[in-house]
Length: 239
Image 1: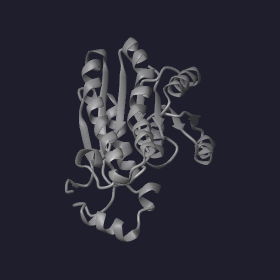
Image 2: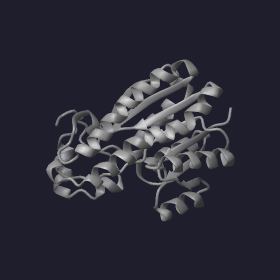
Image 3: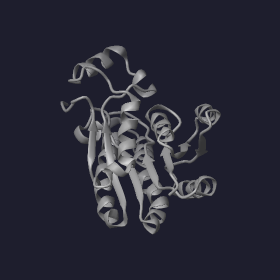
């Protein structure tokens, strides 16, 4: 069986670590990106396959998957990792900030999964891995849009897992805590220090630690795990 994986938001941050991890595991990886051409070209320079897909747009997802399968072969692993933030308290949040986050972070899971699940069902094998967030479990001040989207991913995961369990397809979610990425590096140092104090492990996670979980869930070793949520947050459950 061919080993072809798609990683949305796969050319930077956690997504890049996931892409690199799957490549190391022998997968042909298509890293989907929206607009960062510089990161996409760096990925191509390393021998990877980067493709521009607007994951908030259903047609773009369908067309993108078609191009990937023409170039690499049938997709048997999908990692829905793409995500954005548009933070703000609800009483000041603009409508566009709500819809952009829901479309990119949650609706994308439907659109990308819809594009690959039919083929997975026909072939009797598939792995869909959705990257949620600790803030989808506990909420976060100023993130009603982000928390709602990430919580929605958990319900989506459980429902799709039920639909596909008899077809050799597993569907699982990972909820990272605070991970060392470009996104967290933009947080003010004093705020970041206060966040780390709430993590029992005493540090933020590394992108590679999320990638290792993805690699496990994509493997045959995880064939009896579906509909699950795996937390990777250093023990952080406090508000």
